[in-house]
Image (cartoon, rainbow, N blue to C red; front, top):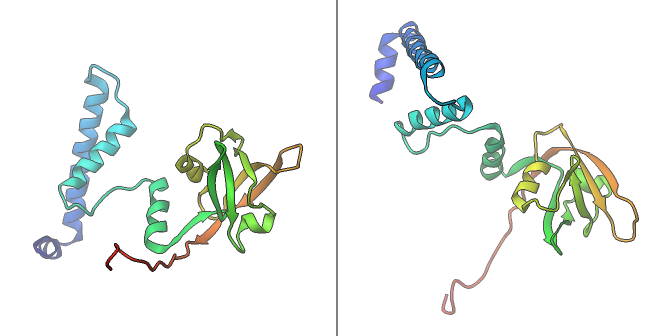
Length: 182
């Protein structure tokens, strides 16, 4: 509250002047490190670390999220994500469609329960974790993902080009006993 009162009294021009001054200081530090530091610096990693350490000083709820993390937060907070609407699992060590969701891009394209996902955008799925596979299948609404499917009884892979849509996560209701007494 004190911070907002101070800013309200100083005016926007003073704030922007202070921001430019601080950005200039950061740029000077970067230039000095790039030209004088003994080892090579991964500037992307260094920048992210700098941002995260700076935000640690504010409060535990102010964080920097990269684009791929933003979609996960949206899924948790809004109950939706950009994807094709399939539930996946591992069957016999192979990434498999458990079920396509009703009215999803996957369902409309003809993807079926039991289909084995052999490739995602041309990348083999054999050694992918479930989490990594889900990250590859999910993405921004309106973008495409190519799933190469092996279907039982079919000799060749079937390729599906799916356009990601906003997929609404359905709540799962539960009722049951907490323990033997309650």
